[in-house]
Length: 487
Image (cartoon, rainbow, N blue to C red; front, side, top):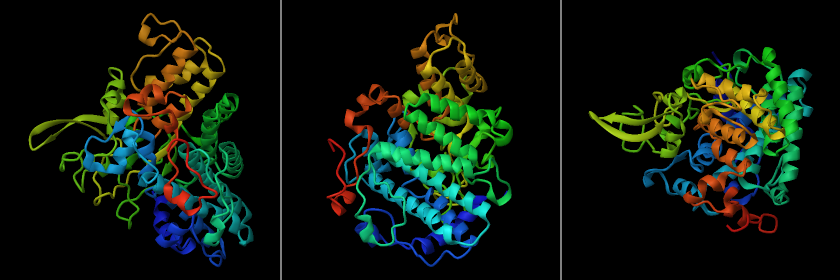
């Protein structure tokens, strides 16, 4: 079915027109990009501008690479096992990354480029003659996307510049210093509340893949959970669960059917970054990125295996016996030239690329299982209830994976959760295996203050819960941009 991923091909051309940019400008301006002020005449122009915001999610500094490097490789879920996979990636994995590491710079620049594109839509659309309902929806989509990008930035870097208007020349960028985390989150929440009010629950035809009301609700619930505002998180997540008749969200009966190009935008998926192979750079790289270096064509038959995001031994051992999710998520060996090679690798994004780094796999940002586990966590954090509703939502996820339910007083100690702390650890474990290799583990460990417990042996120190600010940003604007402590 044609959906928004087809429009992203147009969006790249639109982005070049809408936010004309050069490498020279990126070097000179601390925030975002130049843009044209004469492009926005009608609804089609605004649709192209909005498609450019979605297109920004495909950037290397967003979901093409950075978000899985930070979300998984930084954690204990995956690692770099071959130094030829890249020195900067290795440094992020080993907690030796510094302010000149390209991961920080690419992540910062790509997110602010996307935010500039979102600001263009939000600001310019007011003067465009078009259907008011469509205008309201476009603003809601842009605000959801801006909130998502700021949510990533604030979790990765801490205090960040809060840019809510279009920057029309490089000099304006120097006006923005780092804004306190609290202020950034206030804006994120405001954007998501507006988005929820403005967006529909579902789309059809060519609009499938756009941000929905459910996506805004799910992300808002995650934001509240991150802020440890458990009552608000529980309320918003429960509202989303109760709206299943309108959203159509459900837990698919077969975990394996969540992933792969044939299963995109399914009933469990809430929001995906859309990729499309054979479309002038619109394809996804994951099939090649996650194949072990040296595996030839045994793991991915087209293109180069790059050896990124390799599951750790601890991750492999984290699955319980008979957990159906492991077979659908990773492998521990492959056969090359008739020989078995023992090597872990991710298969959630496997497939045959059209060319190197050119697959059709989307990246799932939010899905319904995440919502159920977040709701169970929010309930437990407000007060443990033996075999209460939180158990029901936890066990829905476990039962789908072929695992027995956990209860408050089970005769099997491995299935017994007698108190709040035990339930807290059960949620931690379940999120690790349920959402493995989807970019959640690092952020979960930071959110729950559990990162040092798992990652000290890997090299993590207390100040490393956030990344260094790119040195290039400090050099450009030293009076407004300062480094995070101890970097």
